[in-house]
Image 1 (spheres, rainbow, N blue to C red):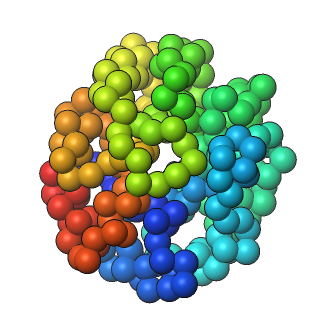
Image 2 (cartoon, rainbow, N blue to C red):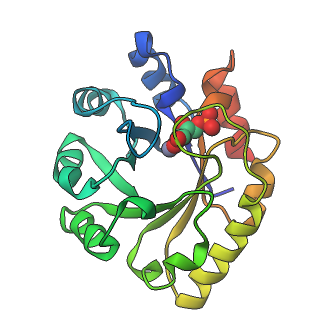
Length: 216
Ligand code: DX5
Ligand code: ZN
């Protein structure tokens, strides 16, 4: 039971963000998952620095920042200053991923890499030792509330094998379509962190959903 739960504020009530942040603070959740979308890499635009800075003022747990933006290098320092604990960039957005990972680490925070559903795990063979976390997208990025892609389970196992083979200490985070029906299987395949958006925030008792995900 030492996995982490990261509620995604993409599905929070933006008219009552403070209330939802305080709910996550009170809950057994471990991180806040923040989805940053540029409308180019993904077909949606979410929120940016002014909102993240306000979230950071209220949040009592680390900010797990998921960048779905092209050319993320341009903004690493600003996300760090806005309060990021961990910044994850998509493999698909980085021309020089090794440089980007070290640019994140140089700011003093943790660095993660994200793979889209179509990107195979072996793409990370030569960088797995350098990253603190790998996030596997279990839906196509851009929206909350989608259904988990079944291929994810075998990808987690492949990633776990790669991590062990290379002696990496990277954590495995799963993002998209996680709910109480699939969480146990994701964890048994090797996941360490579960992102949960819709399943938490569409519930009438989000604290209890987080509790249930944490107790698996
Ligand atoms: C999708 C985002 C996810 C999303 C997850 O692009 O990266 O973090 O908010 O939401 P659910 O849990 O609703 O699939
Ligand atoms: Zn995300």
